[in-house]
Amino acid sequence: MRILVVEDEPLLADAVAQGLRHEAYAVDVVYDGGSALERIDVNDYDVVVLDRDVPVVHGDKVCQVLAERNADIRVLMLTAAAGIDDRVTGLSLGADDYLPKPFAFRELSARVAALGRRARPAAPPVLRRAGISLDPYRREVHRDGRYVPLSRKEFAVLTELLRADGTAVSAETLLEKAWDENADPFTHAVRMTILKLRRKLGDPPVVLTEPGVGYRIR
Image 1 (tube, rainbow, N blue to C red):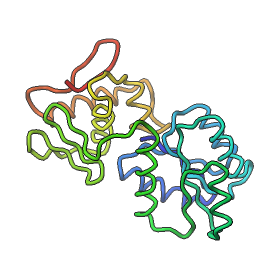
Image 2 (tube, rainbow, N blue to C red):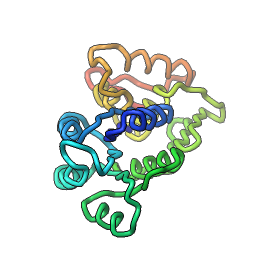
Image 3 (cartoon, one colour):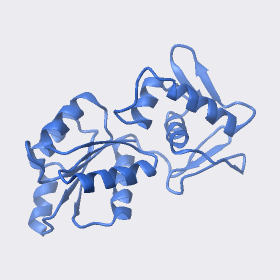
């Protein structure tokens, strides 16, 4: 998944981003609502973690714009205001979930994962194809019963391939979903990750290349 964190406290924003990246998500960070709207116009996000009181463009307005422009993006609103009226207002603006500050990162991560499952067509709890089983919650991959240790990027790429259920996924889409905005689109990052993934999954090969289209699981 690709996530945008919108938070005007840099230390908190960077800590949340670092934690989510550790969970194998691609994460971009901005510190005001105006920058958030600019990024949303350019990038395809699954979830936006949005502080309600960001400057330039208030979080309420950002949430409204998101709800009007793209119903596929899920919004987790963060705020120091934890009253019932505040939560009701946030949800009525178009937020999908609401988390008061201070919060435990484990809860934020779990809520992001739940929203991510709703951002696209629902996937089964464990993804399976061609003898591969991927558990996104335990972060475990097995092939024919054999545990396969993967890096975070390899895990993210395999997740996207398995979600595609046998259809090809372009290198551009993999770059969009598994890397953040700092990734150079002209690098060989996707190709190198696919090579490592094939080696770790072993024989017979199951990650196929569709020339001019992308990659798919057999």
